[in-house]
Image (cartoon, rainbow, N blue to C red):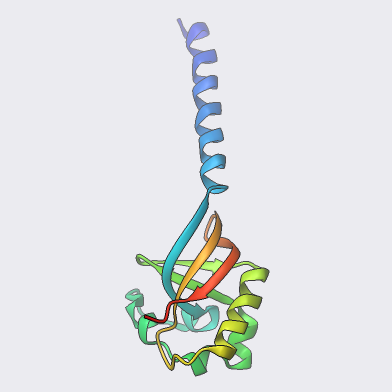
Length: 124
């Protein structure tokens, strides 16, 4: 009985792993608030809702820019890849928002990182 079960389990495992890889490569659009990684790392609270009022001037500081950026969506932080960090820095230079920088981020999820193809500021 176990000899017949082993090949079946191997096939099931292969299907599950393939499905997980396909899900990671799926394009997504995230609607959330941009934050620098330095401020996320220094936060002493698990309640990250403060990100919605984080000062844009803070995120524009040299140390914050060097730490890279992320987006806060549904109680989760997704760090940007290098392309996303470059786009985020440009948005910060041009934003009129003083706090709570609302953005839409397009890309693919890889663990806790989003491989960014596009970031736009939500102004309404």
